[in-house]
Image (tube, rainbow, N blue to C red):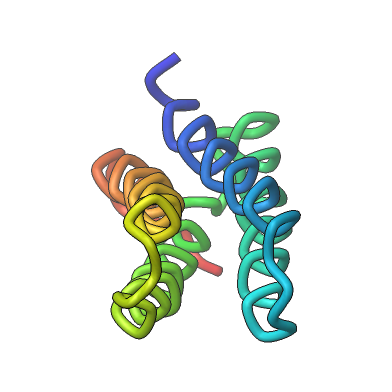
Length: 111
């Protein structure tokens, strides 16, 4: 079960990003959230189906991008109501958790 924990975290990040996308109207916001949901969902399914694949390296790479993109999105939208800002932080945290769990599993395979 522990080897699939990263996949579960990425799956939660994908589901929440996809759910939040239903409430967005700005095209750039939609691209960020839907693109993030698709990438996180694909990585989550890959980790859950085949945990011993080269997914750690992909998780590390997506984790860095996730950290920068959703972190910047949160920082640039500090004027949003607190519940909207917390939803962005929620998505950000699940993606970082997925990357951190996969990183802690050991050395990454080649991409």
